[in-house]
Image 1 (cartoon, rainbow, N blue to C red):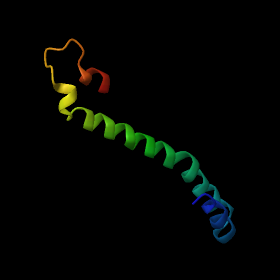
Image 2 (image 1 turned 60 degrees about the vertical axis):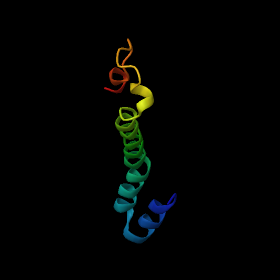
Image 3 (image 1 turned 135 degrees about the horizontal axis):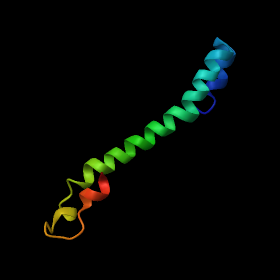
Image 4 (image 1 turned 30 degrees about the vertical axis):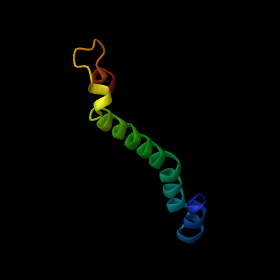
Length: 65
């Protein structure tokens, strides 16, 4: 997938090559990072290890919001 924009540019033209290149290097990495962060935010609230002491001074919820 690294050179997908080269193939698209050669086959479909310069404009579509730029669009695919933009998707590869800008949109996809930011989407993947956002997905990973949201998985951490969702799953850390469900782990019993982080909610063992409800009277704890430091709440994990405050770090995840």
